[in-house]
Length: 614
Image 1 (tube, rainbow, N blue to C red):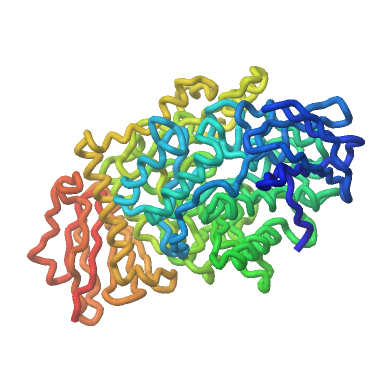
Image 2 (cartoon, rainbow, N blue to C red; image 1 turned 180 degrees about the horizontal axis):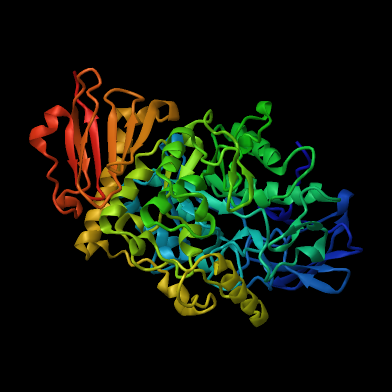
């Protein structure tokens, strides 16, 4: 493993606060204390361009900046708190002073994860970590075992998806800051819920990004959608890598986060001898050994490359899991009929069958949309290594009008889709509000202070939608109304149909957690097939007796399905989405004929069966 060095401010009781910053091209670096009193400390230069020093009388809550070469004042690149804005002084934090109450927390294995992705600012009325905390009992009752927080690293203003963060070490002040996040993790662990944090190591936001003033954090070697790439393999890159390694370790160690979701790792450009992701996994594994627990790294990638997951001995990076866009696209195109943009590569039932049985659809195939061959074979990788969803922040929020599936398909199809995610062999993820059919959109929003930058964001969004034939005008990302429209209503307590949909999700999660066949979820323990005549997908889980047989009717007509007898096997009903208690039209399954393994599926319905004990 490469260089690893602590950076930022660090308070030690009885000793004061030490400061370390990397600024290899600076001639002089000072700490300028702003509050509670003014003071100046000239830092000492050490090897590789690190500058260090300490002040005895600086306590937590004190604010400071660095002054470079006697002129330029900047916040700490490794600031642990920005109590005011991204442009003003950083705050000293004492990570050891928080009262942790999660000593009895038992780390959940990855195969037990049922993930709920949420955006802190829009998930609750308060739009804070405390607001999320209040809703945890509802998520636990639903059956959720892990929440995934969209990025909380300090961003400009108070409204942002989080991918414009510029202080990776600082939890967003308007959400509740560092202590607010720790309190949320405490509460999650008390409820038996793991916490995944989304982190962004492929680019930095534009406003408040002062890294270049300190050193070569960026390189011109590569072109990216965000300008110069972060420097993972050019001159001085050891210390840029250290910056992000330290960041990941801080979230896991000091905030008790269970897993990190690594944003768009295909945009982490690194041709060095050891890829940053491999080095990151090594450090995380080492921290796990020290703390006698396991941490998970989950990558987002659109490259369909099992190198991310495979062990180092097989030429991989050894990450725990990755998002599988192929599965989302296969489901989305089948239920919506959309074929524009990147969806042109999908839309056939056999795509979904292949995804269920083998993982990646594009596993060395030519992509018409990308005009090149894409992907590797994932059939040998465990199912738990792939996170699947029908909705997420990208797939909803990057639509021009931010429509959820609720606006695009029938109520019956919403239940069909829920089954495709929760009854798949893969690690399922729901997007906030999906479980009850939230009708508010999830739009893209920012609150930048630079009007020129705001106009660039507006223009960029319009260009992003050019590949899709979406009608209407894109909402203004900067407008407060755009943000407010994106807040969840949590309306299922007043809306009977939404309540029934949520109960349906809860029931599906219950089947996934308790049915013996789901205790050994592997691709080799299932078979999938699609009947073109009836438009019914057959999915059978055979990991453990009794087996589970799932029937998905994609057609808008009732379909009679006769199952193979398989040595006299007969089936009990576990769940029928057409039942009135789930908001369906009524479930006449032809019960009198069920002894012959013949079932009537209502239009756009899901039937889940379990083999009878012989």
